[in-house]
Amino acid sequence: MNKSDLRVQFPLWNIALWIILMIWTYGVVYAVDMLLIDFKGVFENVNGVLIINWHVPEILSIYIGLLLSIIFFIAYFIRIKQHNKENPTNKLVGISFLKPSEFLEDDEMLRQVTEKATKNVYVMYSHGLPLIIFFLIVFDTSRYVYILLLFLLLIIHNALFYREIRKFLRG
View 1 (cartoon, rainbow, N blue to C red):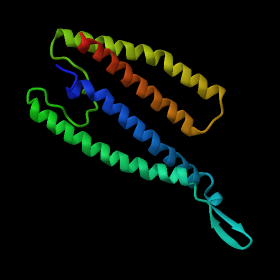
View 2 (view 1 turned 90 degrees about the horizontal axis):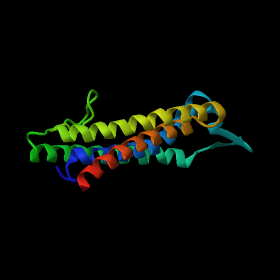
View 3 (view 1 turned 135 degrees about the vertical axis):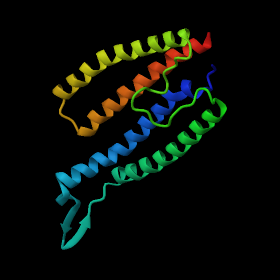
C-alpha cells in the first residue's frame, strides 16, 4: 500500500466534497430563507420603479457550487474507475452507505491503523458535538453558521483520519 492508493486518499476527496457543499449551501440557505420567510424582500418599489434586490454572492455560490460539484463527481468517478482497473482485487464502489471506503482492512496491521484512526475521530466527535450544541444554545446566528460548523466537523473528521493513516505510511 502506498500514498497514491485511492483508499488512502479518500478522506481528501471527502474534504473537497465538504468544501464544495459549504459553498453551495451558502446560496441554498439564502434561497430557502427567501422562499419561505421573506420573498417580498426581493422586490422593492423605489419612486415607482420596481427593483429586484439580487444578492449576488448567494446566487453565485449556488452556481459555483453546482459547477464545482459536477466537476468533482466527474473526476471522482473517473478516479474510482481508474483505481478499480489498476486494483481488480480491491475494487471500490462510488457511493457506499454501509461501510466507508477509506477503511483499510486488508490485513491485521491495516485493521489496527484503521481502528486507531477511527478512535481518534470518535474522540473528536465526543468533544466537537457538545461544543456545537453549546454554540447553538448560546449564540443566535444564521442557520448557515450551524451548517458550516457541521461541515467543519466533517472536514476535521476526515483530516484526522487521513493524518493517522499517513503516519502509518511514512514509517
